[in-house]
Image (cartoon, rainbow, N blue to C red; front, side, top):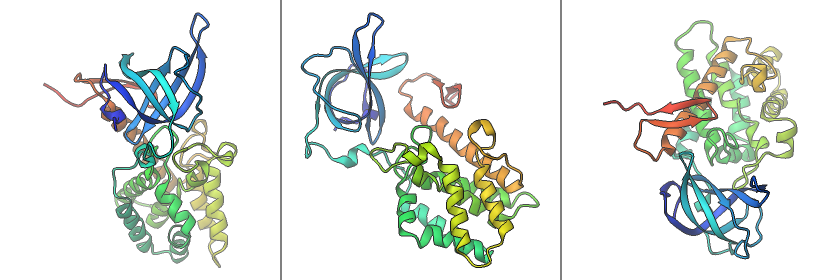
Length: 314
C-alpha cells in the first residue's frame, strides 16, 4: 500500500483510502469541484477533484474509495489531484490500514493506570477509580481504544489513554514539588479529566462527534459520570466529590475555551496546566513530524497559532 506519510511530489497514486470529508465547492468561475480529506493509518491528505467526469463514481464520507491521482505541492503542503474515483469493494482493502493508532503500547499504558490506582490511599477515591477503570468492561475497553480529539491532538486509536497517562504523570511529578497539594485528588482528577470523551466521540473509523457530544460535551458528561459513580459508594464525602468534579469542570481553564468553571483549587489549576501543555506539545510534535522539507521552518500551525521551527542549528 502507498501510505500517505510516504507521499512525495509528482507521485502517481493508485490505491484505496478512507474518505473522511467530502465537500462540493465552486471555483471563482462557478465550476463545481470536490474537496476531499483522505486518511490512512499514517495520516491525512487534502485531495481535489477538478474535473467531474464519468471517471468520478458515487461515494460518500466515511466510504473507502479507490483513487487515481498525482501528488502536488500547494502552499507548502502536499495535495492530491484526483482524476478517477470509485467506491472500494469489500476485500480490496484491510480496514486496519486506515485507523491511525498510538505508537505507544496500550497494554503498558493500562498497567500504569492500574498501578496508579493501586497507589491511591484514600479508600473511597480508590474504590471509585477501580469501579470506573477496572471493573466496568465497557468503560475499560472504550478508554483504551478512543481518541482524545477529533482533529486537534491525539486523534487516533489509543490517543485518549496516551494523553491521559501523560497528563497524570505530569501531575504526579508536580504533586511532589509543591506544598498544599492533595496528591490522590490530583492524580485521580487527571485520570478522569477526559473520560467523557468515550461518549463525546464515536468509535473508529468514524471518530465523529456523537449527538450527546455535540449537545453536552465531554466535560459535562465526564463530570456527570463521576458524580453518578461516586454516589453509589456509601459515605463518599460530598466535599471530596465536589473537589473532584470541580477539577473536571475546570480543566479547560477559561470560559472562552469551553470551561464551565475556572480552576479554584491548586489541584484543578495544575490539571489545567498539564492538560494544556500535553495537548500543545503534541501539536508541535505533529507539525514537526509532518514536515517533509529540509528547511528549518516547518510552517504555520493553525491550532497553536504560530510558525513552527525545528530546533536544528548550524
